[in-house]
Length: 120
Image 1: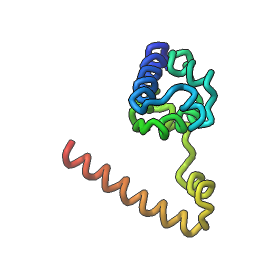
Image 2: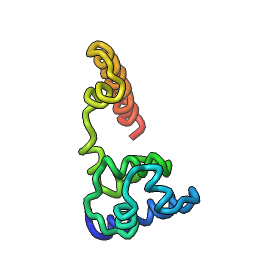
Image 3: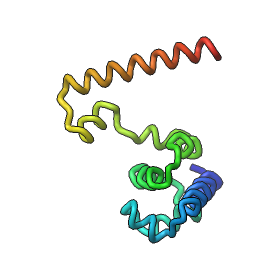
Image 4: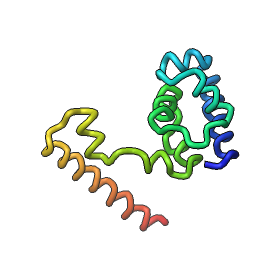
């Protein structure tokens, strides 16, 4: 991520934090992400923020993941685990349940791409 993109991300986070009426200390307490790291992030001094930390911050501040990913040029989505790994770790699902979710996801994704082809 470029220095300008790091500053842009920092401004986005800072604006969202302030809009929620939170201090950096509040955000630290809500996310478990250190005050120092958050200060550096908002100051645009972290050129490659850890996706795990950034995700926690985004969730608390209701920041759309796609907005952050857009600023970081796809870095967040590249670092996310595959859907199978996520559901296995998060929900302790059985293999057949994961396959069912993957099937639904694949159908939705195909439908989305088909629809884009029609309208785009």
